[in-house]
Image (tube, rainbow, N blue to C red):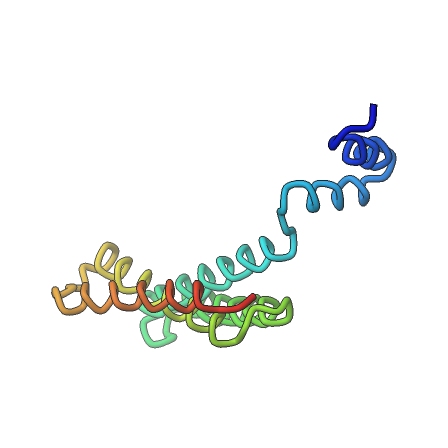
Length: 144
C-alpha cells in the first residue's frame, strides 16, 4: 500500500539506521530548525552574561573588590563572545544587537529595582515598554 504516507514511512524506516537521516527526516517533517534554535540559546546566554556582569559592577565597588571585578570582566567577555557566535550563525546585526541591548537594559532596570532598591518612575516603566515593543518590531520585521 503506497498512499500519501508511503514515501514518508519509507524515509522514516531508512533513517532509523542513520541518526543524521533521522534528524533530517524530523526537520523536513516537523519544520524544526536546530541552527535557528541554537541562535536563540546563544543570544539568551549573551544577554544573561551581560546582565550578570552589569549587576556585578555594583558589587565591584569601583573594581576595588576582586571577586565581583572578575565577574564583570568574565561576564562581558563571555557576552561578546556569544554575541559574535550569534552573528556568525546569520542573525542580522541590527536584530541581534537590538535584542541583546534592549532585553539587557530592561533586565538591568528591573533587577536593579529588585536587588538594589533602584527607583523606577512611570516614565522609565513606559520606556521599558517602548524598548520591549522595539525589540518585538525588530524581530518580526527581520527577513530571516
